Length: 341
Length: 283
Image 1 (cartoon, rainbow over the protein chains, first blue to last red):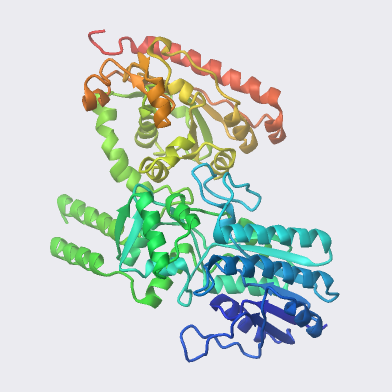
Image 2 (image 1 turned 60 degrees about the vertical axis):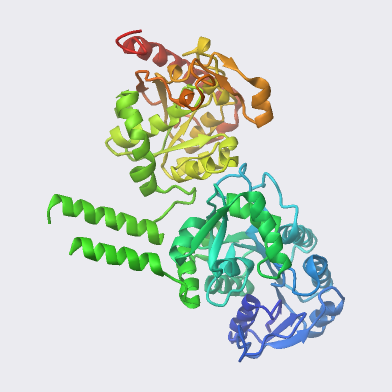
């Protein structure tokens, strides 16, 4: 049986890496990558060799995607094009259209297709929201106390809703929904990684959230496995263990500036206006209450634990950006040497 | 290396770990090192010298398996939770970490919420209780909640209603024993003789107490009275004789809840007699 895989969102880092590992798999005959913009050039920043991936530029809001699927007899669809931050031009309205209308168009095309057998959808643990009334650890069946009402997290909830509808209508298609924790790693560029590359970290006064990261290598491996094997269901994907925000700051050797939550929100909006960092209300809530998910279901399904724990993923990111350690460590080491000599 | 040198080296190693973030917290945010070396260290003088806490029946708390400690709640400000935590950490042979289940109010408030998580506690909800018990942790609950901790001084040592018995259901599901616990002494630390209801409602608090010292003496009114404390652990009540499915049977749950409540009330009465005066040797 021939395999043709369609990957959406290949112009962004994780999407490109998934397309490239699938293209390197001899079992797969064709890999078709689609996105709104062509992938960044290899010589430039963040370019990933796509191998024999065929790139098609598609507007996700239109019916073009259906033509691609029917013309190429696609049997596996990896839907990666959920965007977490508004694009530089267009803003929130365009982001919502890309996320929600784009998914509806794709699901409509899959529904009509006679060849599609497997669908993998990238979602996010942000669908659980973040509130003081939630359990400490979310399992896949958890019902959040306060479901997200804004931005990316709300888009992801709506996307998951449409995917559930599709699963009911096409029971012959294996559907895997992967809820990823925040991506972390050398090549990741997200609001959170940009946050950690600032010279000082504003934090919310009186809160120290628990954070969880998934290393990009683990994310790519999970996507590769689910795109080539049948693992129906919804799974959380995150590195083992947690890091507190204060712990992240210490590991990075960064100075934190605790600010009251109202000022934090204002700063976030100003920074967003200036195009520096994107801080949505959802992220503000994450910065207060944090979020941790249970990953035992995925480990049982794949028979593998992530190679990078949350802490290891963060350390790898710090190493790649060359921001690890710094002054406090040097001072401590000097002090230890002087005293214990 | 001399003893002093070794202690200095240990302290420096600890500081280095703290400064560089090279320590571990569990998925609930529990930071054992911070709890032991800093947070509990701050409360220990209160435990040792102010309340002169005594413990009895420590042998009833299992050393290496999950259990649910169910205690009475009192004192207007929940210091009883902290004292119970110190007792189990410092005076149990296995130095057990107590994981309390608290109200969501705690986790909404700045500072208090993350300190509670760092010292090992979490939200009182079914998911967290089940998860901790399954991991073999020692979980603590105060089923009376605000009704107990905020009751007037005239009702001291009288157990309030025990809610819906969610804690019993969790213990049955996890098949872990329930250790009844009576805390004597907390009732007298802030004798609540009045309640500023309107102000409490405006501040979103469950109550705002009037005590003999508060609010008359301002911040000085926040100093707890030095009552004598006794914390007693009773014989564990087994739950593995039930089927885990019985956790959904309200009759079983209510019956066992009442049974536990009676045991604790009886323990309270006995320990209170044994302790004698709250403020020895005067009254």
